[in-house]
Length: 164
Image (cartoon, rainbow, N blue to C red; front, side, top):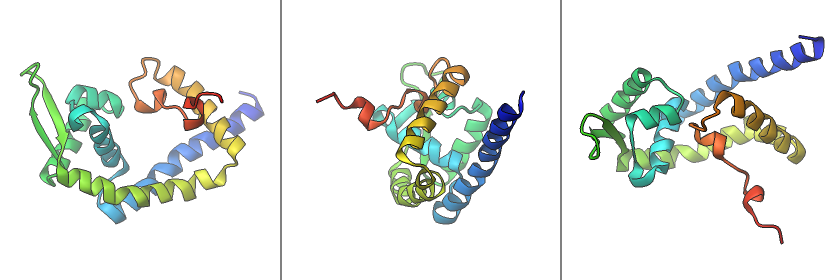
């Protein structure tokens, strides 16, 4: 690595290390959820029928099945998620967000969005936000070539608007 590459790499690693605890702290304080638990609930809430096969949920949250099973068990104990046999394949298990899980997600979202805005988005100009989107997209093409994560396929609203 040359000096410029090393400096960019060090800054990226610092952001990757510092951001998760900030997101966890706010969500733990406001909703008693970790960021991973929040993202798990978000994935379920966004799924058709608000349910997913555990293997698909693991893939979409970039978790191993054992890690996800542990997290879903904790969410299930709190009444936020329920597991049930997959109707198409009784050997598989599905998870569904409960009405209590949806209510907690709705209650947690404003604080989470405020934290994301104050920590990341407000620090960037519109041009930098576009650059961040492009940079993250380039990295995701290599890190998630199969497009398992929802983030890999997301597009800014302006990219979806038809040209006038």
